[in-house]
Length: 415
Image 1 (tube, rainbow, N blue to C red):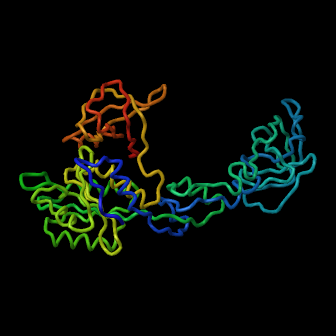
Image 2 (image 1 turned 120 degrees about the vertical axis):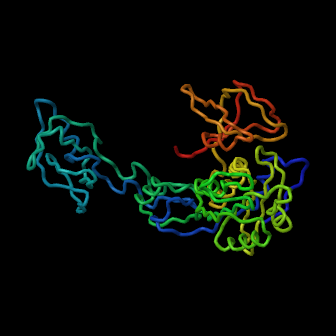
Image 3 (image 1 turned 180 degrees about the vertical axis):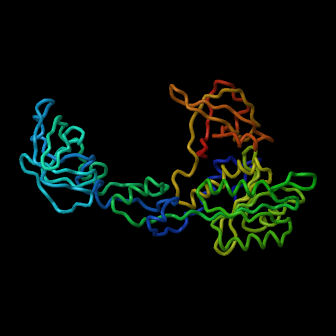
């Protein structure tokens, strides 16, 4: 993994930085998993249907399997009478055939007799057992599902990079697939550093700051599809930091640290890691301008270093850590979905920085989106708690007037 970041002055554009970072990340090795374990992983290769869906012609409804030419004359007051020659259920397996003037009583899911091209709903009959009178003739094909109607054999069910959902599991099982080759969910370890940090459950006070980040970033990693583990608080002690990071390389596919990325006297993470395989870079992102990336350990586990401010850490996670997780998982697309939206309120942005401002986006009745900016800057954390989107203002944008069109990243958090 390359660890020498491109150097520019004063700050590297975010697009260039991400290109450098993601070029050094490789998807995790593929695994063959039983279908029952596949949910939540990402397909490592295209999956092709080995058979059609449905697998055979069957009844879509309860009723009577018949030939349309036999039931066509039926009308109110002049019913058609057919002999019921048997019952078919979903577990029936012997092949049968219809002859003129006969039908089968069928349950939904039952295989259809040869020459059957219509299933008459029971409600349109006298529901007879040995013989049935049909009062209303449905159209040819009614109540019938043919083999391959939904998906033919050989159809690509999902491409490599697709996240496996419960519905996709159902499709895979229905077409005869019991195993899939996947990229496993990355194991992400989150470490918060700082002598001032104390565990959650109390209020911050001078000299003590509640550890917000390890909880928030662990949740963010889980939301991104990772198996996330919170290590907790590590003091600003060089040996302690090295020891914690070395220990985590044994169980992590990605390590995220928070705090200590600046150049102050207490910024121990930067002091320790910048001497080795991790590069700390000023990136043109607001409110998260200082980011670290590299790899540690003999297995070269990727490390993402985020700032200690909670709002900046969460923005840093969105712009850097989340894409790294998606690449490790082999997911496509890597980035959040984006739209162009009509801005409802004038906003101002720092010069030379790409701002990610919390916002609420909404679809308009006539099409398109509107976006309402929320609290940003030093108040980003409270803004993010309400947001369902991030409004993106480019490096050259210092002011965006109400009514203008801006880029918006849609956050797929469930509410």
